[in-house]
Length: 212
Image 1 (cartoon, rainbow, N blue to C red):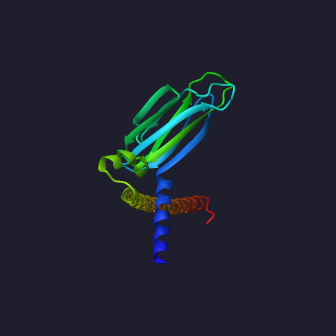
Image 2 (cartoon, rainbow, N blue to C red; image 1 turned 45 degrees about the horizontal axis):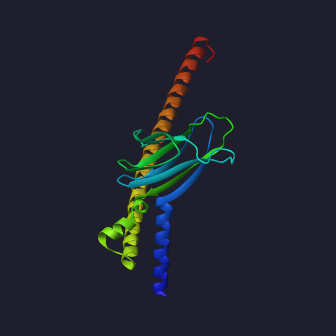
Image 3 (cartoon, rainbow, N blue to C red; image 1 turned 30 degrees about the horizontal axis):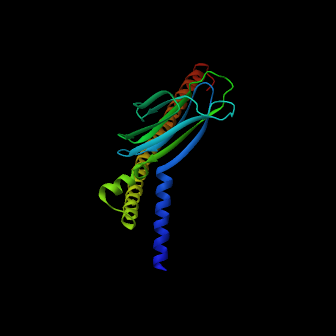
């Protein structure tokens, strides 16, 4: 029974790792303008992404020409290609945050319908396990254990990243609550001062008119 539970846990870890670090996205392209997809990635993580464009109309050519631009959370350009039907970019993240990939259709035809497929491979999923296996001469169970070890490390790093983000959000929430409380007290104080000044003004006005 314990062995079965352990197997289920290992499978759950593998599923979580694959779902968190790899994924494919397909999106329809507008005739004009750009369309973007983003991915939140922590620092010091390897990213390997393949993309390809194609027309959806059977009467058109099978491949479409697009421009691709990748920017970091601070706006630095990491990859930029024009008039390309398919491509690949790879980099190691320097900062944590949302990495943005934007595509624009190069065709000037107004009646074309095109789509772009983007396949993200991040962290453990970006590793070339075939090359690693040949270089270190490992295979079978040992290779699978190495993959599992990498998956566990990736999940652990992701959990640490989420924990740090939770701490940051908690600090932001505390600062926001403090500012709101301060503004509320300040607003209440201003209202009290204005009320006192109004009463003092009205009292002087009525005294001058000898109404009181």
